[in-house]
Amino acid sequence: MQNLEVFRDEVRGWLDENCPESMRTPMDANEHPGGGRNATYANPDTKVWLERCAERGFTVPTWPEEFGGAGLNKDENLVLRNEMGRINARPPLVGMGLSMIGPALLEYGTDAQKEEHLPKIARGDIWWCQGYSEPGSGSDLASLRTSAVEDGDDFIVNGQKIWTSGANHADWMFCLVRTDFDAPKHEGISFVLFDMTTPGVTVKPIKLISGLSPFCETFLDNVRVPKSNLVYELNKGWTVGKRLLQHERSMIGGIGGGQKTTSLEEYAHQYVGADESGKIADASLRGKILSHRMNDRAFGLTTRRSVEESATGNAPGATSSMFKYYGTEQNIGKYDLMLSIMGTQSVGWTGEGFDDEELNTTRAWLRSKANSIEGGTSEVQLNIIAKRVLGLPE
Image (tube, rainbow, N blue to C red):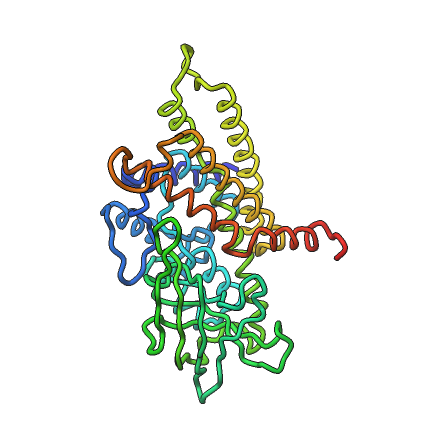
């Protein structure tokens, strides 16, 4: 225990010295620390914070040092998380490399794949996107039709992916392809990686109701992928794909749990006002905000337990569907509450009478609705919870 306290003092001193002041504030959308080959930084401190944490291994603290991590055990990782929370430090790096393909490669990748990709992920050098869903394969993902045909030392990939988040900015894609059309649909799928600059890859952004285009269509026309980029075994990609989905659902679930909800109170004081004692003037609204904070706190403790379990080397299981479902509901509920607080100021889209924060909040509310679809719909998650967690009969 003494050693852990020494570690805490060391981490606290390092953070106090190395975390820029602007990285101790809520993150703006244009300061997203996703990294990548073509990354730009609206705030120079975003890059400084990323580079300092990467040098220390704190972008992926539990990964082995040989792959760019800090090699922390679960207790040390919790100390780091707590100390970063103490100063409200932003995450130095986010993205699918960190939360999805990185953990999958640690479990299923070859030594060569780990050596090539994991250090780049840890440094934020590469931005990854996911090639799973197709126009005819969403909730029934195993029905996918994108093909990969062997050609010497390569696969020739043809097909279309959709809802590929960030594909217009991504450097690499991890992708599910069908390599055996005669096998049962779950058994003829393989998991491959390829550079987005490979000839034959075309990306078209999809504009959402929020006015943003975080999702894309990706067309694959005779894309040549080296067989060395096959992860795990030929026709066994569904095993990797399922595990990665569990990591994704844990990541999406985190958007709703353990977050600070002081912004709800700030919104309430701004738009509703306070009584003589300084409390939010509307008693009903006070109750709703308190209920949200209580649920957020309870969920945050539950996700913390999940972090502890994953830090021991155990990958997330079916319970990740619980986190994904509840985190989704918490995030949607937060934005619903924000808009109810804002009243008519929440209906603006452009023009005078609305400030930037109000317009951004309205768009974020619209964007939050996609949380119930991405990573597997809420209905899919409830089915998984019923079957895999509760053991209910089909």
